[in-house]
Amino acid sequence: MPWEMSMKKIFQSNFTTYHNHRAEPYFTFVKSGQKTIEGRIKKGWYRFVKPGDHIIVYNEEETDLVEVCVKGVRTYPSIRGMLEQESIKKLLPDVETVGQGIKAYKRFYTDKQQREFGVVAIEVERIKT
Image (cartoon, rainbow, N blue to C red; front, top):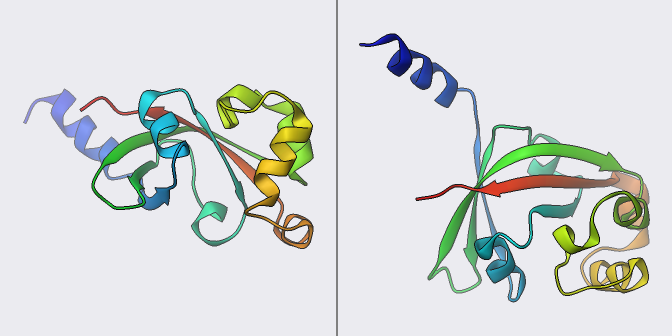
C-alpha cells in the first residue's frame, strides 16, 4: 500500500461521525453552504464533537442529507455571547441582528439550559460528494 493511502486510512480512523436533523429553512441553508456555523446547547454529543469529525445532517423527512466536516468548535456561556462573537449570517442566514438571533434560538433553548450547559458554536464545511 502506498504511503499516502496508509496515511489516509490512519487519518480517517481518527474522526467520529454524528447524525442529526434540521428543519427548514436551516437544512437548505446547511446544504447550500450558507449556514457554516451550528449553534447548540453543549450537552449530549455536542460536548464531544471536535475538529475533523463529520456530521450527517438530514432533513426532517429523512429524504435528503448533507455531510459536513467540523472545522472548529468554540464554547460560550450564552446564545447572546455566541451571537456577539460569531458571524450572525453564518449561524442564521435569515437573521439580521443579535436580538433577532436570540429570539430564534429561544424557540429551541431556554435560559436555564444555557446556564447549565453553555453553548457551542460548531464551524462546519460541506463535504463535496
